[in-house]
Length: 132
Image (cartoon, rainbow, N blue to C red; front, top):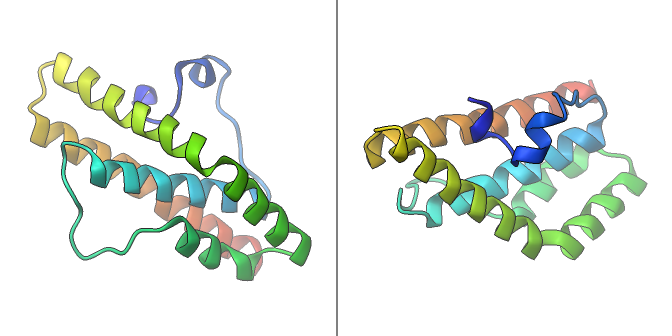
């Protein structure tokens, strides 16, 4: 399953534990971008869900200190195109890998959506819990 969650160089480095609200906010934005790119992939659009990086930032802001809010917004603004390219590449690579292992596209899409959705929910829940 490790092949579905990050670039190869990150997989070799060992797991990283996220511990701060800012890290959870970054993970939330990253997961949102994953879901956006999934929706643009051969898996097709997801129904009934509004996507947007700005929505993810807005969801994170109440859980961040004012300086963290500004840092997050600046980071995303400065890196959003690169992040989209990277997650688009990873989404395609993950789909090709699973299909190369004999999975039908529809099954690969289900697996990938479960991974991306879990990443989003985990980041959101951790962010909400971090400021309680």
